[in-house]
Image (cartoon, rainbow, N blue to C red; front, side):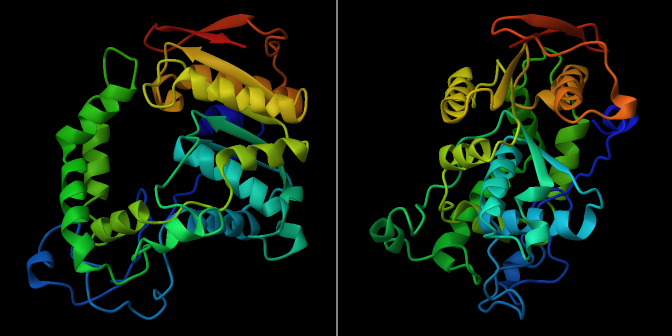
Amino acid sequence: QFLPLSEAGYTVYAMDNVGAGLSWPDVDPAPRGPEELRETPGSQWGFGRQAAEGFETMVIGESLWVQQIASFIAEKVEEPKVILAGNSLGGYLAVLATALMSEAKVAKSKNESVERIKGVALINATPFWGWIPSKLKNPSLYETFPWKGVLPIPESVRNFALNWYNTLRNPDSIEWLLNFVTSNPAGVGHELPLRIASMADHPAGAAAFAQIIFTPQADLTFDEALDRVVENQIPTLLLYGREDPWIVPYWAARAFKRAIRARKGAADYLQLSPSGHCPHFETPKTVNACLLRWLHRNFPRDLAALPQELPASIGDSFVVREDDAREISVTR
């Protein structure tokens, strides 16, 4: 998405959340773990008996990721107006960060509040994350879980997390999973799974994974966050691949109905078909066409003049031809 959006006059930033991609701690967050783990790629760090200085309260999960988004905007983004976009968990975090920043719960000053966020684009956004309830929503159930992601990682969690992590990061498992969520018959190939697997060899990989899966849910649900975003009159794009086996069309339609119930005209819902869970990877030209039409209508730039507009009526559609000759239908 970088080149087409940049050529249209928009500045594009991409950030990794800690514990994803190549963004990891650069020191052992809980040193001196078991000898048998110190020589195993992906699990050398994070399994000691005491957290290192600076890591005593750090939990890799929703709260930290939202804080990162706020800090990234404040410290790295020079433009005064910001449009947040994210796929899957990234979409969930984008709407959650926008909602929380609107109440200055994660912003350090007024200048870093939601006043800078002018739009949100959610691409097959997951409507839920985590399985341990938030303390605010269900305090009694919350207290029944003895560990909630704070280092050090207890021995009772270690074997469970390591076994699951090692299964998921196997290149064959990654390739199978990616092919499962894509609608392209050609699949994803071998390069992407190998790149993901190599990133998972980071010494802190397994420890970060353990923290992520045991992090309690955010105090705001996806629905509540979406309500606050549209109530603040922030244009929202719901862009979903129809053939996603995880975030099926029901979830997209549900989010759209909730948004327009909160404020009519608050959101646009575009459905791509055939396209799966990661449309920006699987059908990039189609996603670019949708993003640019939506951006041009809501945030026009001198270089972004496009002859096409978004379909005006529910059910109207247009077709984009991908570089491999697949034709993707976009329906409003």
